[in-house]
Image (cartoon, rainbow, N blue to C red; front, top):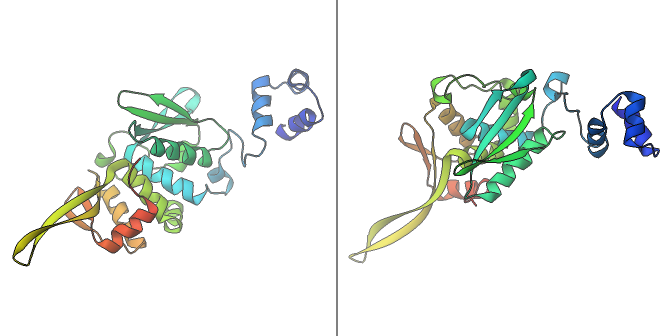
Length: 244
């Protein structure tokens, strides 16, 4: 039906004429025409048709979802994927929107202003297919395990996955220490990445992804992870960098 509609529109037929001929609304026809290059339609799901989402954008979106994302069901079993982004970091908001669009390219992504943050929102019946970790209650009170296909995508793209995690629940800070030099105390400053999460399962996923990139880490507390070695910070700088 979409192919026939596009053929008629390309031949010069008006939206009204094609709508009368095919019994499809003008809004739907306009969407089919303007999004003719999309890989799958608004109700199609690559995971339900033996496909898979784009590895990099999905890995990033998965990290964001595990940190500051949630799914909620609305009318007609359409789910809203929401990722909360701090107003202070417009680049992070842009990246969240870009990854959401890349995973589900046939529908618009909306930004909803709330107090102190922006929700990046997309509606789709098939979001639970992409995030089977969805469930009731806070994530740290339920089991969070990746499926085999999710793990394979993260193995292929651990950098974007860590980017999503650290942009949600992490930060890059400058620490300092003092050392005696020539009988006097000298101050040294060094960058460090920190990640905190109350979910032991999500913390374990962060550790696993860091191991994939051979990044040394340590746990100063049960719910806090630190990457402070120079070589590890350098790798994370390439994949994450400071928030902006």
